[in-house]
Image 1 (cartoon, helix red, strand yellow):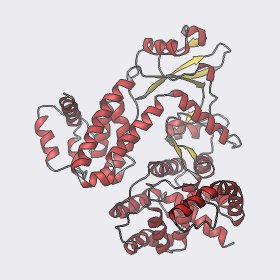
Image 2 (image 1 turned 90 degrees about the vertical axis):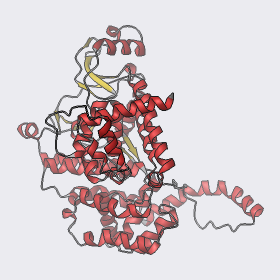
Image 3 (image 1 turned 180 degrees about the horizontal axis):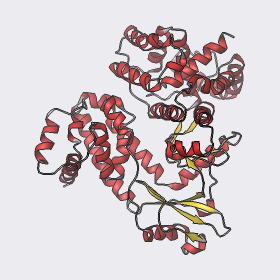
Image 4 (image 1 turned 120 degrees about the horizontal axis):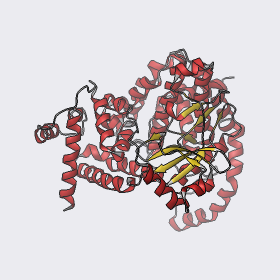
Length: 509
């Protein structure tokens, strides 16, 4: 019975792809067998295509997924970060996927608010606009006023969203498991992990208390930053399915003409976006990962206010330091060292050739290292990395992919506002501060001192294991936290070169 249900859902998926002329997009995905698109066309031959469709397969696929519902939108957004799965042209098309759906009725929103907050709507809000100002796959937003007179935005979950996601994600899990059992390449690409990532992201977004907590944490981290802030969370009016936060008036960063007409300094705004992102990622290891132009609002005084915190990225200190160590090897062009670090850490399987991997790293870096930094394109470098390193069966780590995607978005916004933006000049102050704080001899010595108590606490247990197992104990320095086992060997392209250049500059002062 369950298999029959999945086959029915699969047929509906095929019908949706047919309507948007997106079945041919499947032919460009290496994992999809050649007979699959032909079979789907034969089964759906009677379904007419829509008119006025774009020529690009990726854009057609994005439109088809958007029409099929919330889970398909999230799947498409995840696949946009995985060109190793779907190919670069499709990934670029999926990057245009807009998370927008028609709003659900006000009565449903009112019912959710009253159930979550208790009492009636008027107990919590002095006024509440019935028409939604924005509607996405997970929730929609209404403007309201608190009893104290403060204007707020009220985000309300879609009433049927959990059931729809559960149904569709079950189909994705079934398909991923089927592929991994029958296709070796699917096992390498960890399709079930892709679906798990979609599920993890969705579950987090469906608890608006977690989004509120993410916003509060980011606001605390960025409290000393001028020209950038986050809206205030109204915790008394927030629950699992309802999030109330400060209403922000201003101009969306996407509206370049309106920003110019209002007299804003566009190059300064673009630089601020990049510097804020780097500060969050490098200094704090916690960054706003849904950095598209609609999620940034510019107030009258030029302050940028970030909104929508459903997608956040984290990097551990070890991950940030690992990246810097690898990048320093790139800057020094010591490619064998770069390769050895990857192998020692387990990022590249042992059955791969160390020498060939080092040669591949040289093929990426040598053509780039002699260029002026301002001539390096983040998107082009990312494409080269994926094309080169997927040959070595390297498994990906989602947070690093998320970092790469967000860096591309930040660079794109800077160039949107100022086509002559120099990414090195913009990034240099933030990166130099981070390097001095984390990779200088003084910083390393301070870390060793801080880790000493933990090392001493663990020493008796390690001695006991050594005596029992007759192993050699080697502990010349405080033991670092264990690194995650399956991290990407792909360093974050433009960010990587900028960090590496900063390391080299500081060490040669």
